[in-house]
Image 1 (cartoon, helix red, strand yellow):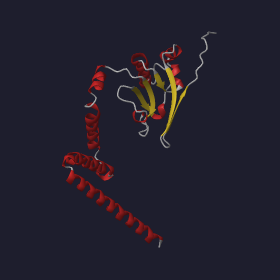
Image 2: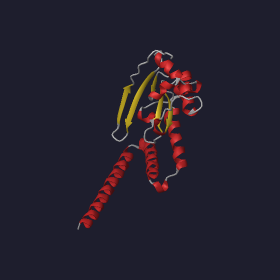
Image 3: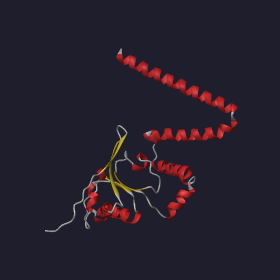
Image 4: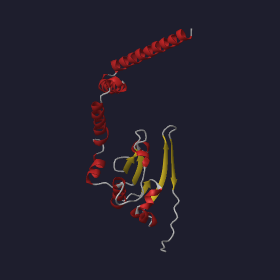
Amino acid sequence: MAAKFSKCMMLCCKEEDMESYEEAIAKLSQLLSMRCDLEGIAAEKIKNLTAELEAADPEKFDPVEKIRAGFTHFKTQKYDVNPDLYGRLARGQSPKFLVFACSDSRVCPSHILNFQPGEAFVVRNIASMVPPYDKKKYSGVGAAIEYAVLHLKEAVNVSLGNLLTYPFVRESVVNNKLALKGAHYDFVDGHFELWDLDFKFAPAFSL
């Protein structure tokens, strides 16, 4: 009985979905019959919806088409409509943030913090790690920090305490040219926390 009831419920849901679909198509046809000027807009939206539905089907997923469509969206919806912004960025960058973030695909800083092009210098790796300062090791992360602090002149850094082991970072913090902030994004609950890091510097001495 339970199995039959389950099948019946699935069938009913499908029938209701079909009725909703047919109703939506009928309303669209009625609207277009009265507003011929909307045909172009409707055609474009239907085309985009079709592409989205096809992309949602893993068997029909085309990675090359995904990249092509993604760039087309960026070019037409952002680049072409913001010529002043991208013109300035073509001449140089001066971001206000240096962000260390995890490589996890679910926690992209640009999306979560709504950074626009040119606003943030982003370093991503596993677990958002900032290794201690070492001239010979960790050259990738170290080079990114050095370039950002010394050449891009960020005002705020979302990072970890290990940044203070980098002499140019420590000097900028001591001289109040740089601020360090801690942050945590919970992508499950959608919560974001931001906090100050309380550092106390003692005068240098030798033994």
